[in-house]
Amino acid sequence: MTTATLLLLLLCYIVNVSCVVALPPKVFNVMAYGAVNDGTKDNVKVKKKKKKKNIHMAFSAAWKDACEYEGRGRVVIPRGVYALGSVIFTGYCRGTMSFIIHGSLRAPTDRQSFSLDTWIGFRYVEYLTIKGGGYLDGQGHVAWHYNDCSTNFKCSKLPASLRLDFVRNSWIHHIRSINSKNTHLNIFACHNITISNVRINAPADSPNTDGIHIGSSANIRILNSTIRTGDDCVSMVSGSRGIEVANVRCGPGHGISIGSLGRSHAEEPVTDITVRNTTFVATDNGVRIKTWAPSDATSASNITFQDINMIAVANPILIDQVYCPSGNCLEAQSNVEIRDVVFKNIRGTSSSEVAVKLQCSRARPCRNVKLVDINLAYRGLRGKSRAVCVNALGSSSGTQIPSGCL
Ligand SMILES: *[C@@H]1O[C@H](CO)[C@@H](O)[C@H](O)[C@H]1NC(C)=O
Ligand SMILES: *[C@@H]1O[C@H](CO)[C@@H](O)[C@H](O)[C@H]1NC(C)=O
Ligand SMILES: *[C@@H]1O[C@H](CO)[C@@H](O)[C@H](O)[C@H]1NC(C)=O
Ligand SMILES: *[C@@H]1O[C@H](CO)[C@@H](O)[C@H](O)[C@H]1NC(C)=O
Image: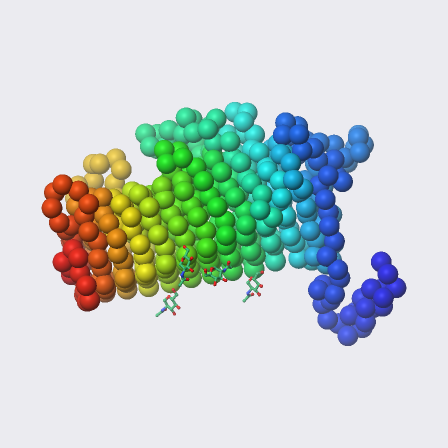
């Protein structure tokens, strides 16, 4: 520490202010901690300087030192391929943190690793930036055939590639996630996170590979990103509040979904959601709100889908309150209340005849749903596109193709 820094810290102490920003950023390069970028050796298990005791794992050790640094600690992962086992980076840290991935991180392929819920996790961190243009390679192809969740209700979940739990005021940008075993990026109990310029890629037939899955979190932005995957591009469940999705390209995948909601007891409301300027290409759904039938009571409200381009999408506009994959819930009703939903300036093509479907619950009809300037043509053999509304209350205005059913 220089004399100048010391004097500055002393001054901070005397006037009792936090001087975190005054310290220069400091690099903690994983190579200095014994990381190996040959693509085979597991970096979590690499020993630091061959000490018998106090064995730190290379990435974790770099993180720990950066986390203890009072200025901006920058964990740097240079170019190269790093085989990395499951690892959780935990705060709280003394200063702010950057995690800069220039290289490619490769997930484990051994079966024991499949039973974990996380490949790379960050917990209890504030002011974290994850960036660098690098790759998270989930190696999903070795694990997808173990996913039997479509037939087995008690299936064990495969690990998400990147999991943020209790992370606040953070930014993830210029990161690529490929072939996650399960969800690519899972956001839980987080606040004020921006995700921008990320690229997410997995095959259309990879099971449960949600792009970005959000729950119990507020103030999350997903901007300027491309998501091609096997499940929802973005899904927002219980307790998602203040979510903005903008300038996103989605497809292949199952579209952008609020829900499923109402399956568990005491789910938190989902509210203040905006999805705008987004293009869907050949997805199974476009913009969707999905609730279980039967279901517990909760709500989804103040939701706007605006300026959206649909290219050969199967269910471009969909409210589905009769979600029942087992198929034997004919008379069951959803208790999720859906209100104040706007679909505005949504144009393009539907690959199925029913381009607009608002299938609401008889027990709790949807209220104040607005269809404004909808232009969705059916590209197929059966004639024109159609709209179907069941138990939906609201209004339509402007262009209505198919002709509105509200
Ligand atoms: C939200 O997080 C960003 C990124 O760290 C930060 O710059 C900004 O100040 C935070 N906003 C609030 C209101 O704390
Ligand atoms: C996202 O893109 C918009 C327009 O293309 C641009 O104005 C904005 O600065 C970008 N934001 C981020 C965080 O990349
Ligand atoms: C809409 O999104 C595209 C990328 O998907 C971007 O190039 C364009 O600038 C965005 N438009 C606005 C008005 O933000
Ligand atoms: C609805 O949500 C938007 C953000 O999507 C927010 O700006 C607005 O204040 C909310 N409206 C109400 C009435 O809460």
